[in-house]
Image 1 (cartoon, rainbow, N blue to C red):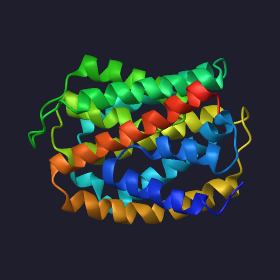
Image 2: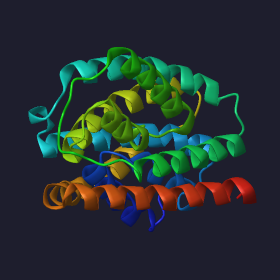
Image 3: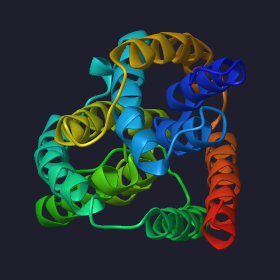
Length: 247
């Protein structure tokens, strides 16, 4: 399963997670499918654990406790974990083509919204009810798609009041770890995942978080936002092609 091309892909996953607090699962799932010769459902199950472990490594590397918004994290974290378990159960009833199509549509919608958002380098008080509903929705999608939810969490955090990209990334990493772990637990017994493969792949990806964290500290908000949006468009195109071609 561990082909040679998976190793540079693992580094890339770490770079993206460290830099954007998002996108790890969106890269991991296609990488495991196309480079690891896995089915979508197998890739989803393994991706959840990989993303959880790599996000945790990025949290430690970036010393995220200096930037945390505790009330917001608790609200999104609890509702997200509940939604993730429900999403993992729902995923068993969906075809792989439906999952891929949903993946692509969501990515394009988020990319379109994010392209219009202006960041102001501020952190505001969050709104409880919107945060709870957003947390549930992202959790459900996390379980269905096998992603940490970061490609939705970062825009959600920006929408809820964190308009400083590095702060949104820091909080996103915490939530990704929680959501992906909850989804991974829900997949236990439903799909075969090699523990050794998960740990090895995650260890290599964790090295990439060092590079991603460095770039996050050096690049201005507008460049980070544009780069994040470009990543979304590329991944959305990949998953849309998979849906249409049935590959």
